[in-house]
Length: 427
Ligand code: SF4
Ligand code: SF4
Image (cartoon, rainbow, N blue to C red; front, side, top):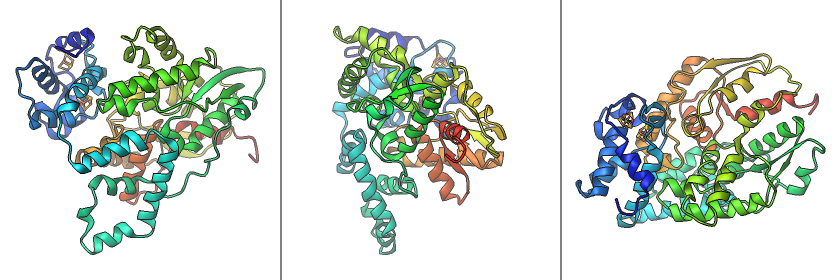
């Protein structure tokens, strides 16, 4: 298996084809096809790498349709590291794949605009103009909508209605002095997190401050590299990882808190990503051991917050990169249950991907939409008026699907509810 690490080779061989993962795989559950299941994809990927299966467009399509949600890893009794196999396979196939101009445009957006919060904010502004000035609607009316790539229409549909109310740049020195004498943490903000959900980062800081934790937010931090790694651009992901390690190491050994599950999962993977780098392997391992999801960080501390009631029926969606990639399920639920008056209703299939999956909802629109509709059906069944979920991509995807169905259900991060409940009276 030239070009693939020994760990990847062992990973492929550890699949015993038992099929216990199949019923947990969203694409298999939706399509019922073996080749769109984890087991089928492992056979395809291993076969292509070993030269036993031709690397046809059809073989690539089955792998493209994989969400990378890693639900199969949770279900697998043999410990097959599916996510690692997928990333390694995609990286090896990338140079040989033919790309249409619309794909290349999307690549530019994903790999050059999304990882930069400022560029992304400008792009979002442009998207709002297209939507709010009726340009998209006008194209529909004159039958020209087919001239626009489908992902562009999807992107405008997902934009939140309101501009983020909290876009004031974070000033590290200011944030760090909000609370003196207690513990300290560094905040990883994320690119989409900071461009679209800046208010979630601010809520995280306020909650941590109220817990007696001072928060430092290094200004030089960059994208975590998740979209690069998932898209087969491993070298770019490694470059970003090295940069983040340098930046956060300069702030000592404080825990690195993140409120975006997709970024947190990637940061925890840095040890594995840089295992072959003689200069960074050990530092990457130490860096990864410092990373905590915000719910995980708060749950390990005595909850000293004075919480006021929030009288609402809330359901919780498990982001794949929190439950499957980080194994975090109980902590966000415990935080929500700690809020007086809040009625938490369990969501059926809460661990099933909502179809966001990083940038999947821009590249695989049909499957992403089917999964979002399935999610919304279950949300509706709970009767909840609020959905809590700890990942920016899930928030956007679920909110867009709820809007499409005309359902007045709010989508928030659990830390926002904790922020509201712990705000000082009149605050
Ligand atoms: S990562 Fe998700 S979509 Fe892909 S094979 Fe595993 S369960 Fe299925
Ligand atoms: S990935 Fe795991 S659960 Fe799925 S078929 Fe292979 S060994 Fe079985």
